[in-house]
Every structure is written in structure tokens, then in C-alpha cells.
Image 1 (spheres, rainbow, N blue to C red):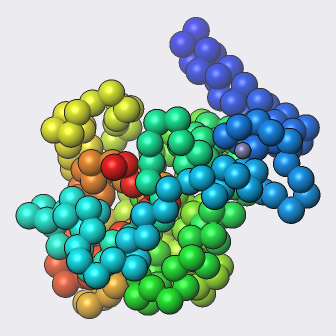
Image 2: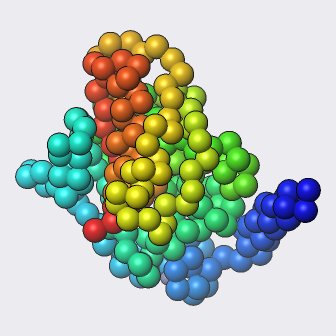
Length: 240
Ligand SMILES: [Zn+2]
């Protein structure tokens, strides 16, 4: 009972802290400089300082393509920014995950859609945000990948299928595990809930791709349900 009350307290603190920050501050999420009215979430310098991958312009296979070689077949992959410790992209993702900033997720999704408006990755039948466990969603207030997906969907006029796949287990945090440990941790934690039409093209959206283990597990769950499904991947950031 004491543990439950402590957990509930942490959830409420998360909500109230986030709400307070949202209502009373308007500073850059990375450098804390006060924003001018035209700036959103980051100051101009921090936006410009984020390292773009420009994977969408690369003709040769990207590092992200190569991450899935010999693991699973992916039609298109793309990530907008590199993710590194101390970077502005890390500050954005941290705020999105832990600071109760739902509008930021929609904003970043819309930004991604505009940056990739001519990329073939937009020509999909549906967008699937990487599911998180309902307990985590309750604690966070939302699924951050779903917000990114909704921002993309609004611009690209593509449906979001949030309930296509269910997260089966509440896995431990992945932040301290190595690549192989993470795979053990997330293996077989997704279950496809519907029979899918053949030749469907689905875009899976995530906030950050690091090892690709979660995505690989998710792709396998979808293909277990319908092997002919074509799958593409898009994330806001990619760990170098
Ligand atoms: Zn800044």
C-alpha cells in the first residue's frame, strides 16, 4: 500500500510540475534563455545548433539503414537529428518524455512532416506510434511517439493506428543496458491485435532510435500477423 501511495505521489508530482512549467515559463528547453515570441521550445541558436542527419538526401544506405541489415527488412528509414548527450535534441526528448509537454510532441511531429514533405516515407497507408505500456502512459500523461505521429498525420493526411499493436509487458528502463541486454529486455513484448490487409505499408514512428531492438521486436510482431506488410521507420532522433 505504501509503495502504491508513493508511486501515485510521483505521478501527481509529474503532472503538477509539468503543468507549472508549461504555464509559467517560456524559456529555451536547452539553454534556458528566455524565448522571444517567434521562438518555440528552443531559442533560434539551439534549433540551428542541432545536428541534422540529412539521411533523406543520402543516396547510399545510411547508418540507420545499416542498423537493421541482417535483422529485419525495412522499406524506408529516416531520422531527422542526431541524438547525443548534452545536445539540444536530448533536451527536447527529455522534456517530451518527462515534463508533461504534450504540445511539444505535436509540434515536433509537424516539424518532421514539413522537413520530409517530399520524402517517399510519407506515402504510407497508416502511421503506428511505438506503443508503451498503459502504466507508463498513465505516469507520463501520454505516449510521446503517438504525439509525434499525430503531428505527422495532421500534415500528411494519413491515419494513426495507435491500437494496432499492444505492449504486453512493462519492461525495465533501457537506459543502462547494453545492446544485447536491451534485446533480451524487449523481446516478444508486442502483440498485433488485428488481421492486416496484404501489401499494407505502415510507418512506425519513434522519438529516438538507439539500438533498434524495440523496433525490431515490433516489426516482428506485425509480420507474425501478416508477413506481406511493408514497414518503414521514422524517428525524431538517432543515436550516433
Ligand atoms: Zn537555447
